[in-house]
Length: 92
Image (cartoon, rainbow, N blue to C red):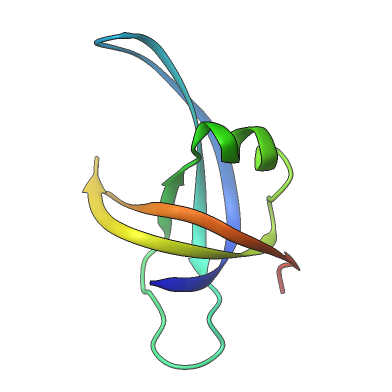
């Protein structure tokens, strides 16, 4: 599902997993689709290592096109898996 979203928050998350320390960047996204039904909840997305290198610290308050492939709940939040397709520009 391809959706235009606005990045409203970015945070670092670190923990020790089975294979050692894990450092993630998690972004919070709000649906900015102009027509049709909108997603009702804020969606969290963990940046992949490639996305982290390209986008971390650069996409806050910007609109993104995200291609989601899976949604799941994680510690009470909705997390989406997928890829950032495009950075559209400033949020409005």
